[in-house]
Image (cartoon, rainbow, N blue to C red):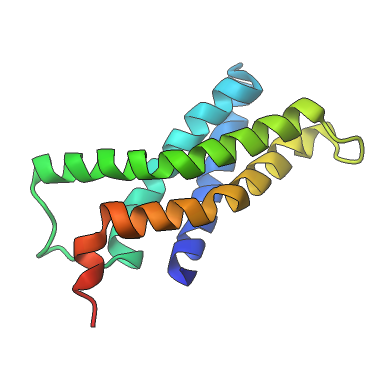
Length: 137
């Protein structure tokens, strides 16, 4: 879980970077967040498969299996993603007074990431990488 959380911090940084870039390009609070979430999922999939769940180069699946793993990962992240996006949307919609408007997306993404992290770990561990995880000593 610790490795998954560390990778999640990297995903959080990707999420925030893409969100602010998308908002600057005119995507808005919600459209930018959907794009940033997909980019964060793509980044964390690559890092988690190697760092957290130890998919070595020798055990790396072929292109078709890799594509299948990506879709399984995206599906597994959907539960946590729904919690994440819902938390973000609620915070942005309610716009708490003490949070400066420029920091609101950051607070929303961080709160959403915390809300979805456990669901995402369980999905990755038991749905996507179960074979790789069983091979660990």
